[in-house]
Every structure is written in C-alpha cells, then in structure tokens.
Length: 166
Image (cartoon, rainbow, N blue to C red; front, top):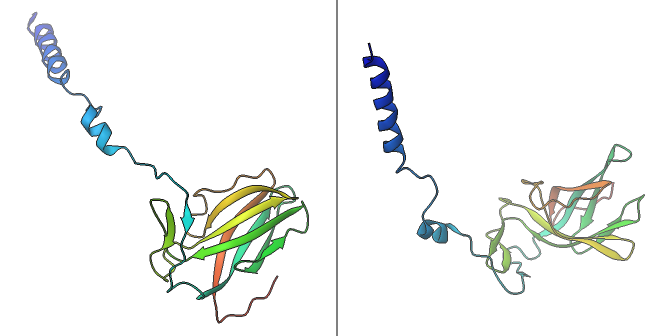
C-alpha cells in the first residue's frame, strides 16, 4: 500500500541527485574563450583595387513615417542629396559590394554583391546625426533610428550605367 508513494519518492530523489550535477552555465574557461574581442584603434575603410571605380551610384529609399510616403534617390558614390522636406541631407562616402570587417578595417571581400553596404553621413541642418552603413541584404543591421525617416539601401549601379535622379 505504501509501495507506490515510496517508489515515487525514491524516483524523485534519484532525479534530483542525478540532475544536481548538471549545470547549463559555461565554466570560466568556456566563458573566456567565447567572448568576442572588440577591435581597438581607428576604424578605416579600404576599397580594394578590384572594387575601386567599378561602382558609380547607389539608390537609397527614404520612408517618411510622418506622411506615410517613400521616395528613392539615386546618387553617385561620393555625392549627396537633400530630402524635399525635413532639412535632412545624405552624403554617400564609400560602397563595398561584399562588406567585411577585419579588426579595425572595413573592406570588401570581392567585387561580387554578397553583402552590399554604403557608408553614409546624414545631416540635419549642419549637424551630423548619423555616420555609418546601410546594408541592402540586412537593412536592420546597424540601422539608423530617426523619429521621422527610415533609410534603406535598395540598389547599386555599376560604373557603366547612367544615373537618373527620380
């Protein structure tokens, strides 16, 4: 009559003692080896010779969340454009078709569009409010947060194509 409760208690004790040695947290050694080492020093952008001059322009979509509109701007790399409303200007710096970061160097692994990114500076009036990258395949990565506008890299044009602002 007491056999079932005693078996249940014995089973619980065995499970508790068996699981007490299991710890899902990594050991100190595992924690140290899994930490990501952050690069130190001045970050620089290097456009490889096989990429230099191969890309002429990028197309950036600008969504106006206040007016629920979107407009695209095609701009030569190294040039800028102004939004029609809002006092915002966007300056393109460099385009890397296969963006990679190696320590403090941002460069392109090749001229193939594996991870296209454009470096931009965004100004509100004369004040720079963002300096970073827009990525077409991963638009949410390092995305610039602005209360009114969203910026997305949507296209990139090789050097032989003509640029027409829309």
